[in-house]
Amino acid sequence: MNGSVKNLSLQICTCISLALMLSLIGAKIVYAFSPDSQASAQVQKTPQQKQIQTNTLIVGSEQDFPPFATGMTDETAGGFTVELWKAVATEAGLNYHIRVLPFTELLQEFKAGKIDVLINLNITDEAQAYADFSVPHTIFKGGIFVRKNESRVNSESDLNGKSIIMIKDDVETSYARSRGWDKQLVLVNNAEEGMRLLASGKHDAMLVNKVVGLQSLASNGITNIKALKVNAGFTQKFAFAVHDGESDLLSKINEAFAITKANKTYDSIYEKWFGVYSEKEIGLRDLLKYIIPIVLLFTCVLAYSLFRRRAERKQAELLLRSRQQQLNFVLEASGLGFWDWHISSGEVERNHIWAEMLGYTYEEIKHTINQWADFVHPDDVENAWKSINDVLEGRTSVHELVYRMRTKNGDYKWILDRAKVVERDAEGKAVRMIGSHRDYTERKNLELELTRQAHLDYLTGLSNRRHFMEQAEIELSRAIRYNTQLSVLMLDIDFFKNVNDTYGHQVGDAVLQALSKICQETLRQVDIAGRIGGEEFAILLPEAEVKEALEVAERLRETVAKTEVDIPVGLPIQFTVSIGVAAVINKNVNIDTLLNQADKALYKAKETGRNKVCVY
Image (cartoon, rainbow, N blue to C red; front, side, top):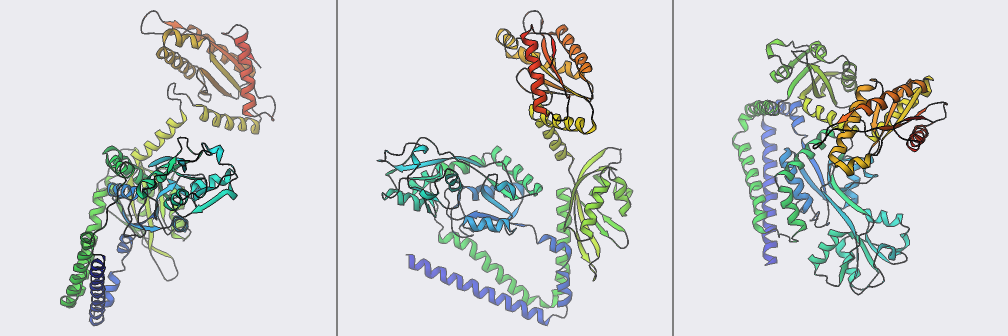
């Protein structure tokens, strides 16, 4: 049976080779006898066609790392991450070619820019220096595998001095070396090789991704190996990786990944590869499904070349027109504004979407470069021109910038502008530049809102601890540099635990929110308040000396003491705060010292009766 399949495969390959040779020979004959061959060649080199040819991503998948990746060649690529990538790429509308190589070679080609996306890269500090990551698609603990009759190894601490099997160039190898186990390591190419070596009685244990190890045992029928219940000290977070700075591509991948989670496609793929370990053999029918269309395609190309050679120029013109129509359709469907700048004349051709994006009709806009500059926000004009000039003068290859443009009604929209030079003269001077506009407002507003939320405490709306400390460092540096005053208040709600225990956490939250509201209404706009603990708050008072800080603290304390907080049942309750005050008195102080001084004053206030203000 195997011999018949091999003979059939050989015959199919021979047919494909003959079809390829005949089509190439026919194409060369037609081209040689065509009087318009040069014109046709020029048509094929238009900038629009060059742009269309660059839309295929090279996607890297690791060789033989089941269940994440299976297959040793591009054509046989499979596994969890390959199927998940295909689902994500379909949702995102991405064109791609999967390239299968050993992991080390994949990483080298990715760093060299030959691969655009790695679909199964572990998120580490080292990797984040050269790649941006999607949200993780799988997170797994490291596993410790031993023989079932092994009693000497029951935890990671027992591995000291033992012979340990590991997959070379994997994350666990770096982890093992950080533990000082270099001389104990036995490196193998894959999990199967390591498990068979351990099962044969050699060496003491194997460290490997727990799921990979379990899959290897199941698929190879190895029964005398077990995984310890305790995990190793390393964790692998796998994600899709793109080159550092490819924010738009990463955004598309993350959005599409979220869709596969929402529509359960991810769950189905995950269950297939991590729930049931099974592989599907590629049969003759699968091969023919790909081979027959290729043979038919080259046969049609050859026939077309032979019977339509006299109409080559006409067909080339029709093809160019068709592709122009396709490009227009893509621009229309994707909502992209198009612009084509003839630099020497200053004229700019735009489509109607470019105008409508800003609230104008096509007839209302002028086709000049100044028309664009007039719309750009005054604060963004300099950066926009700099980015464009960098491309015109050859310092960068692509203009890509998000900036604001004024609409017809006077509002501003965020626009993602992408462009490149498509034609230069004999001296290298830019002659023509083509670009597109995309309405980026919704995404930009989302980014700004996410940044804002990342800086705020979810309950009170004040700065969270991390953001407060960042602002405090800035204000302290400014005060020292310009020799100005700076004071700090530390506030703590008195007997807050009693409030939670007596009335419940819902009332406790209402008390925290009431204090937050008082701070916002009482403080100046330049003052900075933050929640840095459960019921503990801190306030920065720029350009305020101790006397002024005491007045602010007393005003806050008195306002709090008079405030009533409604509760679900019963009369409103009141609460008080204790406040500690500290100020910058010399240039050698740092923010931690300043806060610590205010904290000591706070504890003095609490120890001496609460509901009072004390100075350090």
